[in-house]
Length: 72
Image (cartoon, rainbow, N blue to C red; front, side, top):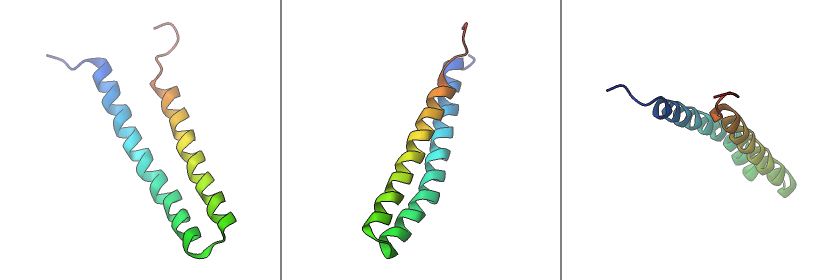
């Protein structure tokens, strides 16, 4: 029995999401750690907001990617 196309798409999206989450945590998490160790409260807040924006952007990207093309 062939796998359901939707299940394949869901699996690909899940793998993409895990890769993206790892990328964000490595990049932005490192910045956040550095800010927490050596920065001011303002720098820490700004770095936290950068991480939040990266997460939000990835959610928008995932949402746009997971929608079927118009007409389907």
